[in-house]
Amino acid sequence: MTGVSVALTIAGSDSGGGAGIQADLKTFQELGVFGTSALTAVTAQNTLGVHGVWPLGPEAVRAQMDAVFADFEVAAVKTGMLFSGEIIGEVAAGLAAAGNPVLVVDPVMIAKGGAHLLQEESVEAMREKILPMATVLTPNIPEAEVLSGMTIRSPEDMEEAGRRLIEMGTKSVVVKGGHLEEEERACDLFMDGRGERIWISAERIQTKDTHGTGCTFSAALTAFLAAGEPLEKAAVGAKRFIHAAISDGLGLGAGHGPTNHWAYHRSGGSLRGEVLVDS
Image (cartoon, rainbow, N blue to C red; front, side):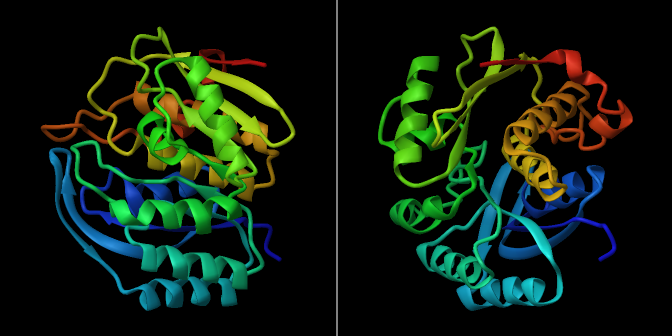
C-alpha cells in the first residue's frame, strides 16, 4: 500500500471541462485522491449547452470498470451520467462483481441547458438497479422530484422526498436545495436510514458560473469518503468545496461558466465559517 486513496468516476465526458469526468478528476486531484475513470458517453458541450451526445457501448463501459477494479484498490466510486438502461445494467453488474464498493450516485438527468442526459425510459432502471446499491444519493430538486414521484416546493417537501428515496433502498441521501431560490441560503438536507438528519447551508451566491456544480459536489463527497472521512463529515466537506468553487468564479465562456475547482485548495479550506450545519 502506498497510502494514496483511489476513487473511480463512471460518467460522461464534458468537452467544456466544467462537468462530467473532467470535473470529477479535477476535484479528486484537488482533494489529494488519485482519480480513475470509466467513460459512459462523449458529449460536445460548452457553457452554452450540450450540442451532441454519443454513448459508448455498455460492454465498453464494463470493460473500463473491470480494468480499474482488477489493478487498483478503489476506496470509493461515483456515478454520474449513465444515459441508458443498458449502461445502468452493466454498471450495476460491474459494481456487484467488485464487491459493492462505497458508492456515491449523482443521478444526472438533465443538463443546465435542458438537454436530456438520461433517457426517460431509463429512470426506472436507475431506481431498481442503482439506488439500492448507493451509499449516498445526491439529487438536486428536479432529480429528486423525478425519482421520488413528488413535487418539491419547500424544505418540508425535501424531507419527505428524502424519506421516499431511502425507502427505495439508498442508504443515505443528500437532497440539494439550490433550486429553492426563494430561500436566502442554499440548504442541502442529509438523511440516512437510521433517522439521522442534518441541514447543511451556505450563503447563496448570485453568479452565472454554476456549470458542473452537481458533478463537483458529488465528486468532492466521493473524494472525502475515499480518504476515510465519515459520511456526514464528507457531506459537509463537499458543501464547503462547492461553495468555494462557486464563490470564486472564473468568468469563462458566454453561458453558464464552470466553477473554480482550485478555489478550495487556494483558500486552504478556510471557508469553514461560510457553511452552517444544523441538526
